[in-house]
Image (cartoon, rainbow, N blue to C red; front, side, top):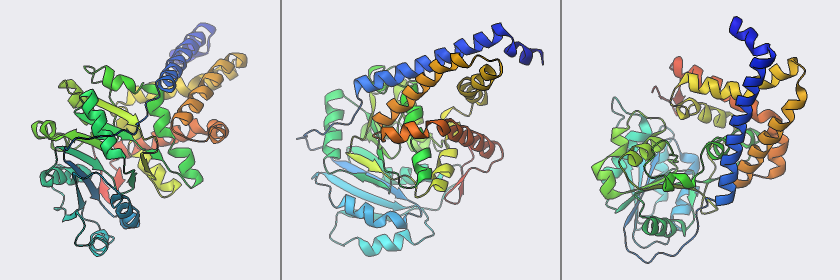
Length: 377
């Protein structure tokens, strides 16, 4: 009780205000560095002959079959094998793919094994895909991702000139419903205000500076064989980020960029689906450390009602300006309309708070379920 009272006295409130102001300044600086450094995936020519295995697990993805196959048929890289694995779908995904894939197409369709104990579903599916692949580079993607024909050669060129062992892309996000438009931009908002993406490659020996997206993540085969990431991280919900942290701790070169129209996706089909999808991941992004998440929420929200109650509303203007700058900067980087980001700013924090509460609740009550499977970490 005494600690709460101290927050409301002048000195305690000013200390909290300075802490919050500092946190906002650091996040604004991260966004500024990202805007200035423009961490976009650039189209490039590649003349090598490395074989690439494009590996896509599918679970209940019948709605994406047509779009996925249309995207795969546009790929022009000559040294490409494509392997699709049905992960025990219950909606007819495998039968639909079997009908739609022509016998003369270079697309291999596999039935996945039943999920084994001790694994998360996607990790197990990716592990099976890696076992079946023959490529020098293993590129894992998702059924809802659309890859531009120039993306794979550009990826190989980027990996070649920078000596990369792992490479990942955060795709451009396609949103349609208003629920998606409010929730999906949180990915870029969190990522680009907490980490300058260029540091992932530049700070090679710092595993803490890592971010990746399993929607488009590539491994050199020799590295993957030495450290079978999906097997080692079989219980990790965010196995993409964990893979980068492990790789960097081992001294491997990693890089993550933004899609820049070469890789795009519509992650979720509705606002409700987006809420369920993000709430399964938010807590894991903070390492399941409740104190860390609470500190982040406290420094993001608590100062505003406290300052208003004490009549210091003028001091809130710098925080509002910094917060709006962070929101607009990450929206610009993520190719989101600036006007929409500005209009949605007042409710953006409440969306994040709701997702955080839902994510923590699901984790501690063991109700984190996705596509019919429990995701207990």
